[in-house]
Amino acid sequence: MIEQDFKFKGVCKNVEKGSVAWSSPSNIALVKYWGKKENQIPANPSISFTLNHCKTTTTLTFAKRHTSNDFSFEIFLDGALEENFKPKIESFFKRIENYLPFLKDYHFKIETSNSFPHSSGIASSASGMSALALCLMSMEKDLSDGLKMTDDYFNMKASFLARLGSGSACRSIEGDVIVWGTHSEIKGSSNLFGIKYPNEIHDNFKDYQDTILLVDKGEKQVSSTVGHDLMHNHPFAQERFKQADVNLSKLKAILKAGDLKGFIEIVESEALTLHAMMMTSLPYFILMKPNTLEIINKIWKFRAEMDLPICFTLDAGANVHVLYPKKNAKIILEFIQNELVAYCQNQHYICDQVGFGACKIKE
Image 1 (spheres, rainbow, N blue to C red):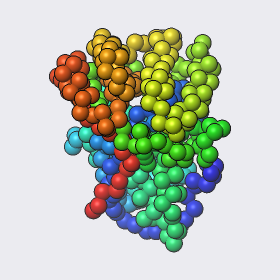
Image 2: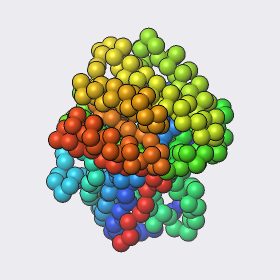
Image 3: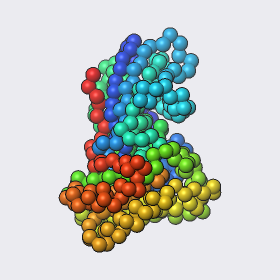
Image 4: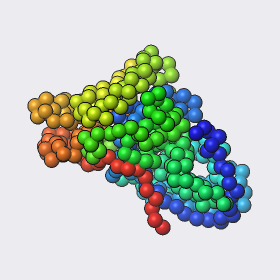
C-alpha cells in the first residue's frame, strides 16, 4: 500500500449528524522507535506488545455545518473541556485532511477518558490518537456511499491515520504483537502503518504480563515529540538506527524459539539505549528517577537469585514496565508487591497483559 491508496474514494452521503465510540489500548515497544523523518515516518522499525487494560475510550459526535472554512471541534477529557489539547488535534486534522476530505464539513465533539494517568510514561498519545482515528474511520465508512470497505483496509487506514497523530499510535489498532517500520526480514512491514507480526511466536510469549510501576504520575520532563527531534543531530543516531534493525532481526528468532533469556537481553538493552539517547543529546535529559534505578536493580537481583524470566522495559519516562510470562505470575507478583511497590508514587501500579487491539463500543 502507498499513501494514494488511503485517499477517500467514495461519494459522501448526506449525513446530518451521528456518534461513534471506540476503545483503544496503549502499547509497549520492545524494540524502540526513537527518531523520525518528515510526515511521521520512523527512522527505524519497532515492535511492540499491545496492552489490554491501559486504554483510551473516545466518543466522537459530529453534526453538519453550514460553513466549512476551517476545522471545528471541542475536546473533553474526563468530562472537562481541554483547550490544551486543541493544537495537537488541529495539527492532526491538517495532516489527515487529504485522506478524510469531509473533516471541515462537520463540527466534532471529542469526549475521551484514559484508564491510566495521562502523560506519565504510559503512551496515552498512542491510545488516544488510535481511538480517534478509529472513530473517524467509522465515520468514513458511514459516509461512503456504495463503497464496500474490508476489515483489513479499515484497520490499515486507521493505523495510517493514527500514525499522523502520534507515531506509536499506529501500533495500537490491533494486537498482540505489532511491527511498524520497514524491515527486510518482515513481510508486509511498512513505514506508513503498523502490521500484525506475521511470523511464528512461541507459546512462551502468548500470554505475557506487564505490571506497570508508576514511579512518577506527573507530566514528563520532555515530550516525545521533542525527544524524537533531538535525534536529528545526535552523534550516535545512525548507529542507534542500525542497532534497532539488528535487534529486530534477533528478536524474530527469539520469538520463534521461545528464548526467554534472549528476549530479556534485547528488551532491557533497548530500554536503556532509549534513555542513553536522551542523556547524550543536546539539550540532554535524564528521564529516569532515583526510584526507577532502585526498581531496576531489585529486578536484576531477584532474577539472579530466583532464576525467573522477569525483565523491565521503559518508555520515555520514569515508570517501569515489568514483563514476565503468565506461568510465573504468582511468585513475581508477590515480589512486586513486597519489594517494588514501595518505590511507586502512592504505591500505585497497574497489572496489565498482552491484548488484541481496539474494539468498537456498541451504541
